Image: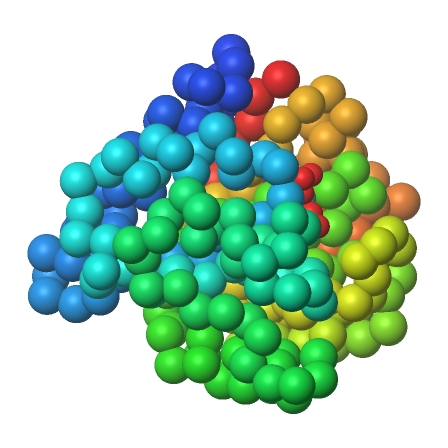
Length: 227
Ligand SMILES: O=C1O[C@H](COP(=O)(O)O)[C@@H](O)[C@H](O)[C@H]1O
């Protein structure tokens, strides 16, 4: 396996500023090439310092297609909605709501089909939980093996979180990997310990979704970490 690229920063603001520039440059390049830029961003807390800075990048946001990497099955405007997080920070982007159907299964199917039409993506920025989950692919959840399978068709699925809101929608790993730029944003000491164990291929980490990400993406993955 080629090792992921590790980018270590002294603090979260420095990390966010650097990432905003990197992502802005990627999105601009696809727009200058005459197309639309296509971006998937993690939800949760970690992207917060990044999003405001990203909004300040000189881009034609109306030509950026944006979707969360995963979503909680809550109202689109709920405080815990990943879409709401993105909509608040980047209102001018063309946002794709993962709620593309009346049930989680129907929504995941239709959302996955729309995302598959965006491939290859310009950039994907993932987050990670302390339990080693990425997007809404949680350790031990039903359907995890298929969701992480190398060579699966890019799609979306219904995920199951151990904490509320438990019903999730998530891109599968194959879809997340179909990106010209792939990053993992990780803050804090506890998550760093998880990552170091994964990078050392310690046996107890081999069932973790982030382990599958590291193994399958290898040197294409950039890990951005700050305390
Ligand atoms: O539930 C989720 O968790 C992860 C990690 O979130 P964080 O708050 O610890 O940064 C996130 O990447 C994912 O998109 C989200 O739905």
